[in-house]
Length: 229
Length: 229
DNA sequence: GAAATAGTGTCTTTAAGACAGTATGTG
DNA sequence: CACATACTGTCTTAAAGACACTATTTC
Figure: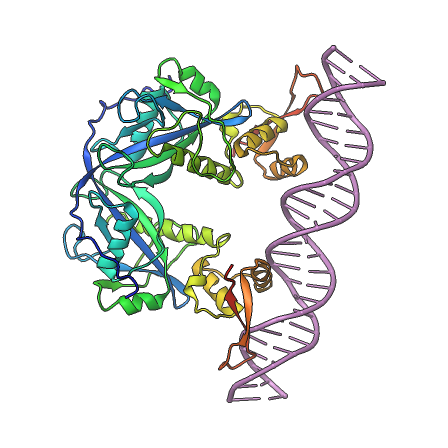
């Protein structure tokens, strides 16, 4: 009988609000940035927040996440991955809301191209640490969105080590230097060049196009594309 | 405009049911087993299911998961970790229910000791694959619980490679052989003895007690405990 | 001594980091 | 030519797997 704490009476089941929030990350000027929208309504009116919507009664979670991106940022066809579910009772002061967070990584161009249609407001999130945790985004974020953002960055950095993330963020043909700079941006640190080259070339993911990068001040680099197979 | 599919009208926000389901894993006779309870009610009456409850209106998610274990299996003080959230519209035929899955790993003794009080019904899940995916548990599982179980096993196996999981499942003093057998049980495959010994001893997590395993038919092994620090 | 597991020592392979040195474009 | 980056080759280190061998208990 190790726990003699007072137990509350069995809670009665209740219908709760279910929301999705989307962390859309993008490499921008050498560091990671996240898409944020400015809230018009209370609570947290005027604050920055992750794009999110309430889930419809017959709507799949991932579809709701896609809808959030579409309606708040004008973006479609983004690969979304579930991140974590946040459900602390006080996280939304209005009513109990459980939020399923999703994350995605897209090239900045796509956000910029869609920018006109959406209500998106801010884009740069200076990222201090390396290990995750709440994030400072200049302005304070609404709700627990700083925690969500922190977890998202931690997750994407972890995935980069074993998953072929990032090819979708580069043009069809790219150099190993491009790829390394992208990885460094996502990871937020320099990585060893020799080891990176070896690892990428040994992965079998790359194939040389035969072409070279032109229009640069220095020795042109071999262009690669991601192998189809 | 890459996507010209018909878009449904914006769904109206709705209050949904939020549940938690708990995957309680335990090493048992050399393989992983999961705690399942037999459902009394429709739907899926008579089927095996993961212990779960609906989340109370003011109840944290993790607390609801602990309550599920307490009420359906008589277990308290279990370390729970959020696994994934399942929310496909058809997963519960009665009404739209989003389920936040949690997982835990405990020693079989604790389940057996609590067994009398709970309504627990089945305990052994023969585990076929290594990579996750839906699971056969002998009997068909209710709802999408086979998928949840599959993801849980995949996750615990992944974590074993870098996290000091498992010490809580052994008595305070144990041999390297005990620890290796535990890892092999969780992973579902044999692992290299030499490498395992080196890795464990080099991890700094272990310290020799000075004692030896007695009462065995063969050379007694050094006993270790997990280092406090 | 046989059986069974515990534990040690060494060799090979693999991957990462370090670093020297060469190659090739621009100014 | 200097400069900046691309690329190659080699050395070292660390960790994993393989394997041979020794050690210590019970029967």
